Length: 217
Image (cartoon, rainbow, N blue to C red; front, side, top):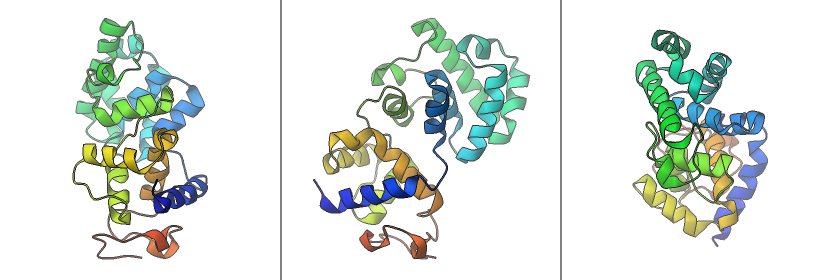
C-alpha cells in the first residue's frame, strides 16, 4: 500500500471530527433509515450539505416513507424543497425513486449496486454511498471532492470518476474503502476547496503536490 496515502488518511480522520458530517453520514448515524439516506443523497447535488440537511429534515416531517412521499402533493413537495435548488427536477426524482421502491422492492432500499442504479436519480456515486454508509459494504463513492483531492495531492492521476474509484481501490486497503469518501469530502468542503484552497491551515499540506493549484490561501 502507498505509505503517503495512508499517512494522509490517518491525518484526515483526526481532522474529520472538527467539522460537520456529510449529509448521508448524518442521516445514517442519527436515523439508521436507509430510505432517508437515499432521499437526502438524491437531493444533495449542487447544494451545500447544511442546506440539504435542513431541507431533508423539513421533508421527512411530512413524508418519511416511500408511501407518504408518493402521495405528497407535488406543489407542496416542491415548496418544501424549493430552497435547495433545481427543486422541480429533484422533486420529480425523489417521487419516482419512491414509486420505484414500492413497485419493485416493497418500499425497501436494495443492497446491490446494480439494483440501486435502476432507481431514478441514482447513479454509481449515490449507489456506492448507500452501500458503504447504510450496508457497511466495501465500496468507494466518488463525488467531486473524492475525485479532485487525490488528484490534487498527486496520489493518483485520473480524469473520470470511475478511473478514480479503481485507482483508489488499488491505493488503499479494502477495510478503508467505505469510509474514504466522508474524510475526503469534509476536507474538500472545509479546507481543500476547488478555488484558492486554504493551504496555510491544511493539516496535510506537506504531503500535497498541489497539482493544478494556481492560487492558495
